[in-house]
Image 1 (cartoon, helix red, strand yellow):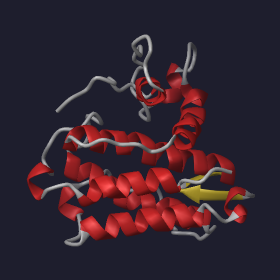
Image 2 (cartoon, one colour):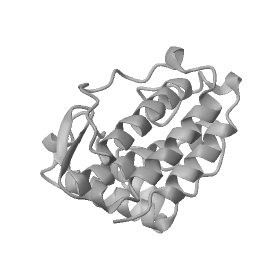
Image 3 (tube, one colour):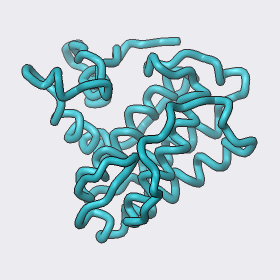
Length: 192
């Protein structure tokens, strides 16, 4: 088990400081503008909270993020959902047995790694797009990396599917966060 709290709190802080004028800004996650990515984070926070509680949403994969679906209160709603996400994964029962998120059934521990990866990597995306700093904590970066490593290295290209782009070489001396985002196919030096 690891605590998602430092990563979710860091992401919540980013969300609270985004201006409406930034919602159309590009992000390192090339499929999404910043507002689209915020909608995606809103949905994933709820989906992985439901997964931790072993509740069934009865839904399959969520639709792609879309800024037009952001609720009026997104600056308070998304941080609240992120806090609920961290709280739900503090229950040891969340890590046991099987659960499902986005229509994909997995064991609890793997689901927690996926949730952590989503928060950490998209937190970095949002920070870059909005010109903020993001410090999710070493434990969260390590947990996200543990998930991404399952799809990294020679011979894993087919497994990466549409989840990650082709791996990027991290610069010598890169931080753990820079190494992680490079493994997901993002350029650690990306700027808006």
